[in-house]
Length: 287
Image (tube, rainbow, N blue to C red; front, side, top):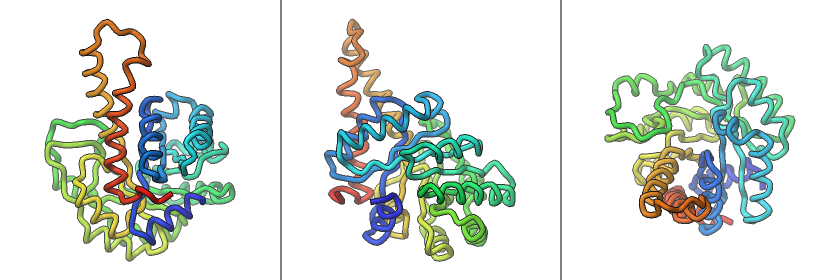
């Protein structure tokens, strides 16, 4: 099945596929173990910073090898891809299923123009394209400060803009803002499910993604999935689980220098987070 097949199935059967960011080999292993245990399709994604860390070709080789080893559907995505040249590089690599072109720093018209070019190139290679015109704020960190809710609401996606962007670019997936934000916060904002419903009605033939999936309560995520979300991005919760487990392991084993002996419990801690998310998304047992 292609990425489009999986997202079509997810939309029809009311589940979402977890899109988990990878910034270490241990986190990659954790995602693979969790998806395999849950018999779930999974998407692994790499931001520009993560691509720079691994190397584009190494990213592709990791995923191709994992597909053979774990024998589960593993979709590969470039997350928040920019600049344009990086997105084009990913399109040319065999192994990617999806590229997310993040043109949210551009003017709306320029974003549409550049995104359409990406769509044309990607579709010729059989890839899906995710577009973004409203900038998803925050960062993939554990924030201690409170959110300015009024400022966040000012960034919410306008339904008319969503319809125009999709119509003129032909993107397959739309990343919109309806209360979602990157990172976790002391008080997480509620999702505006009614706005999400309006966006889905305005672009009924386009898949919808939820960025900033960390920290959102299970019931809110499930409500979003029920209204058409088929892809949920998760990063911060994986990083927090990794860091906390590693700090504990180092504290308990101060004289251990073999990294591969320190990481098994760390990997399991991250895998536990991924398994929980897969249950919430409803993708367990779909393969």
